[in-house]
Length: 253
Image (cartoon, rainbow, N blue to C red; front, side):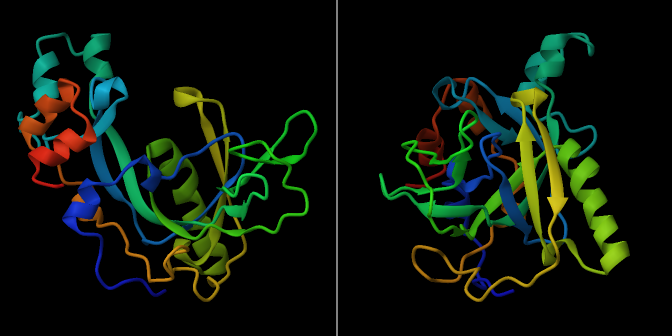
């Protein structure tokens, strides 16, 4: 595989938005190619107050046993360990990995939006995600956009690790050598995601180039993604700070 030799910079990483992350939906299947042989483990809090009440995730500052630097955990440590409010604010184990989003997309002839095919439940027709226009007869190609896959143990331990071990034992291939199709059902904590590997196949020429610029895409630095913020940033997030406000504190414009 051929990427840009330089990973995403600190500024690029800090300015990332939700669009850089894989989003699963029950409206269409998502196709991904793992780009790292292993995922990185992080422990993250979900801060609902942050970003004007829309919420943001933050890596826990308590990165070592016995360390008590995290303002979130300090705020609730006076409550019993089995208290629901305290448990709701615990850091959750997450895994992060670079992926190539290979979900088939097309340009809608009705609104010119690049869209996957959303299946109309009633008619079975393939429709544009944005305008609902009919996509019959459209040609689909892989999106081929480098993104971040961040999910919990259920997806990684119960699905991806099993797939990786099975494909290695049966076919002698690594998880970076084949696409995986993800199907999602349900919402939020009730969401169930299943993963099915496709046959091993090399990526086509140019698959790793940016679809818009044609330049080699950069991978996200997993070390930076798992780096905890400053405690002051956590305090600001608890007060509702937006991404732009946090970046201003970091000196990032």
